[in-house]
Amino acid sequence: MVCAAAQAQPVFALMYKQQFGYAPSCNACHKDGGGTAMNAYGDAFKSAGKSLAAFAAIARQDADGDGIANGDEAVAKANPGFKGSTPKAPGDWLDALSLIPKEVQARFPGVKTWLPKDALLTDADVARAQALGASLSKADDNTIYIPLADQRPSGTALIFAAEHRGKPFYLLLITDRQLNVTSVEPMNTRQVPEAAKSAIYASFKGLAVDKLPAARGSDLDAVITSAVKKAGTLLYVRLKSA
Image 1 (cartoon, rainbow, N blue to C red):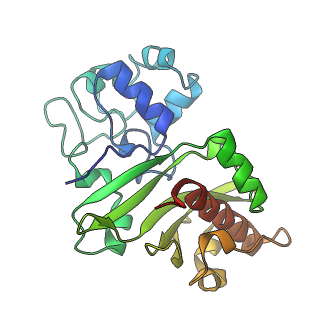
Image 2 (cartoon, rainbow, N blue to C red):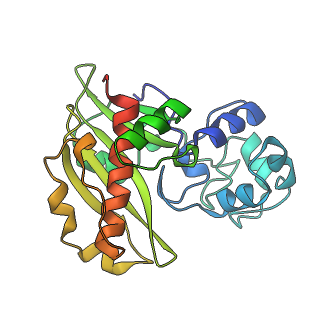
């Protein structure tokens, strides 16, 4: 079972729970789990102002196009961002393992117990990140997925975004329990297909997340390096005592 609710946009999830009485899966507003691109419901919530009032503003809309209003689906514990989830057949979007992106589960085969941890950045975290050479802000809040073995962390996973020439793509960072990088992988590069072919990913393997290199230049590899640096630093400032 999962030990806590996964919240890819923690502020959104907290407000969602306040509005509807339960914590959503990150798939309520993301296409492929925490840290990935927004789905139509997430986009609508963002456009309406990302506040409690935004839920009411988009309640009569039908973001996923299934013929049922967003608000009606949310109240019935169906996913307003996924066409295949309706009040009569909500599916498993709130089941424990469904809260963990399938790409993350695949990197830790056999793990059944997870601790999703909200990486809510404080001013002190931002300052520590700056000292490590990474510019983080509270907009970089994310979810850290922690697999547990014998009730102890056996590693971490973080899905994070990068942007090249105005187009986003998404990467997956995996570490061991000492927060050394075991892999950085392209996860969703549909808008930047060349990101899937970069050789830079192998250079991060084995590095401690607080020792990742700073980017040099402005080409795609520099964009990837900068994004990995930020992701690793986020892990460090939130989990350095793990």
